[in-house]
Length: 258
Length: 310
Ligand code: SF4
Ligand code: SF4
Ligand code: SF4
Ligand code: SF4
Ligand code: SF4
Image (cartoon, rainbow over all chains, first blue to last red; front, side, top):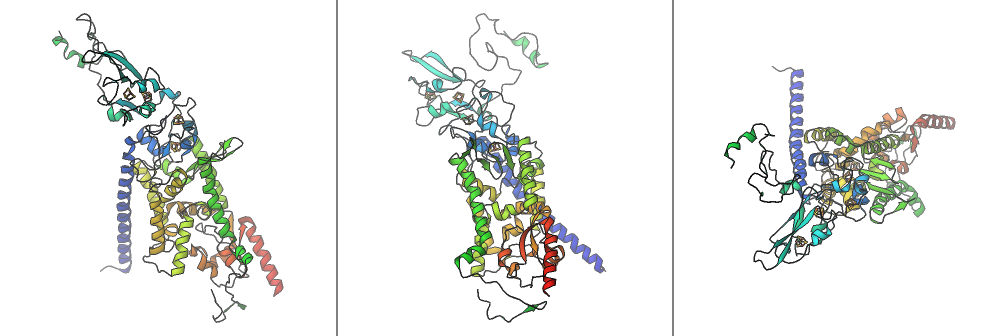
């Protein structure tokens, strides 16, 4: 009993639904591709000052001005199908590390704010975090090396060496430690490490860094994350104060402590 | 091309002549002047970006033009940016630095004046590729395998903006075969060339002017911008014989709606890329580049002279 107008309207509505479904299907596939690309971010070390993953991915217009501005040709733009978000800047420390220019020319060149203005000194950059493979590090295995310690631009702060007696007691080892508080992730250490594959690598910090949580207390911990494990001289030294600083949690074990 | 055997047609009492490519070299060069100019411009744009990145070309101590078509800095002071890319980032709900916003505004206003799709036929690196596909298509006389609506591209623009909003990322920039091609020419070749290879095959085998004329959201964005264009093709109704040569050569033939052009004195659609193909091919010189404010006056004058002749 459909009238001509009714039929026309029905046909129109069907076409509308078809168009909308097509757009929705295409949109879903498209969004999937986008999010998948963006997910590759943890495998790219960004230029200094880069904002958080989501913001950086959204803001960077993939113009390459940071790449051109770097005097050491450190940065490059990811090509398609690399395991890194397409078109965005990154660097590979083993090939070419960031030499931490004090005037930060890459950041100065960025027109979008993807490399943020807030960072004042290049030492505040957090491009990644160096981690040492102690099973392959020459120094940890008893040879003298300490190349990373000597090469690190944040000398003596980002990497320290610790003297210790080798397990068989015959000689002194100088083992390197990385301190996240100062490491900028520039990758000079990874670049210079003499082992066949670098035994110190820079990776995005959140891939390797844990978080203890506020309710744990450390004996003899220095504030700021550098842990030097010193057994306390007297049984009471280094014990948590009885003032609970995290409400509730601290009361938990107080009675059980020796 | 020999039209000699065709029966003589007349229109409004005038003999309809068809186009013949001149025999002399200088004549040919003159007939191809806009084509040559366009290729030189396209190539120069790439060269300037490339030379700044790789050979550190400087002028007055400043990098000549650093960056790429997405965003760049001219002589270290003038920011330039792709307004469509910037629009997508804004739709992704992120706040951009002023520099890139100024750059986008400069580019937007420039194209709004010279014609939005001037980007397409004079700058975009995909254009030589799709032109080649179109040329091969004509040589081998390939038929369309599919029908696409030319307005699809505007739906693409809408889709790109909606997806940018939903995904929180500039949706077209992350998959754009144009940006991939351009970026990888300047910053190192990778698999990005696959996108443009896809476009080439699509244009060659599936739909005539398939990508640029039906799908590309960037071209569609610039078509919208081009509505305000001040440089346009002037159409002289008094000399046109409706031979149709211009329509055969135009990559966007729907814009050469000659009755509408007669009414307005110009090709009005923003989809016209100002490529200038139609200008040298018109046997009656009825088409020419002109500034929009002068078009009416020029057409008036032409009508008066032809009235005097009669
Ligand atoms: S700080 Fe210097 S060396 Fe490091 S990426 Fe930026 S420009 Fe290059
Ligand atoms: S300069 Fe900024 S916007 Fe351009 S590629 Fe580098 S980080 Fe991205
Ligand atoms: S990445 Fe290596 S060289 Fe650079 S600051 Fe960290 S420890 Fe030092
Ligand atoms: S440079 Fe390499 S091998 Fe040498 S101490 Fe550092 S991590 Fe170990
Ligand atoms: S339509 Fe798109 S791909 Fe074609 S020339 Fe224009 S911007 Fe380039």
